[in-house]
Picture 1: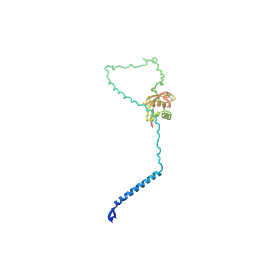
Picture 2 (picture 1 turned 180 degrees about the vertical axis):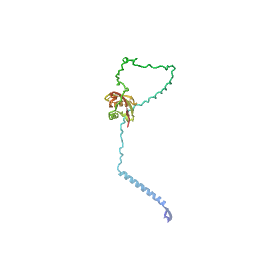
Picture 3 (picture 1 turned 30 degrees about the vertical axis):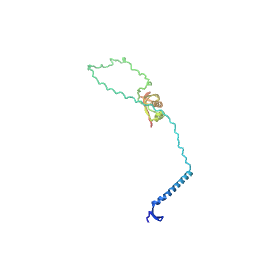
Picture 4 (picture 1 turned 45 degrees about the horizontal axis):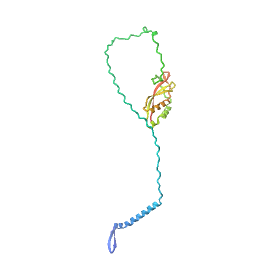
Length: 229
């Protein structure tokens, strides 16, 4: 007998049934049994399963804070082209090569007739920055306090935006090393940084400047740089 078929007798006639025929006859009973079992399992699951609730995932946003943007920087126009030097012209006037300067003698210019030497007039240098002769420059004494003042005076709106700059400042220093006056010599391009530099300049302390062996008041230029680190 073939393993893939069986011999069956129905009504006195003989016929072969394959495994496929047997599967088709059993499919209906298996299908409906599976559907009933699945329905019962789902019913029991929905009936006895604990109730599920969604978790609250809502959130609140912080209030936005507006900031004032720094003013726009106006780029100055390029400098004018430097004019070429004039071509030298040779004079046509005739010059006598025998011209000499008469010698100066004490006989012709006695000492008694000479004018007195000029008196040194006192010059007030505090009115405006001027060149001040000195042999020993003043030195900064309180660098730590200056750095702290720069951090404190740096405008936060420019620091947060990553904007820095350098301000060249004139210092008028007394004989004791104190800052008597301060002025912006070269701007950084930001008025807020220029004002901050003048605030920092008031904190500086210097050693006295010397002109030979004499303590003198002087004007000096120093850069004050603000940068984000």
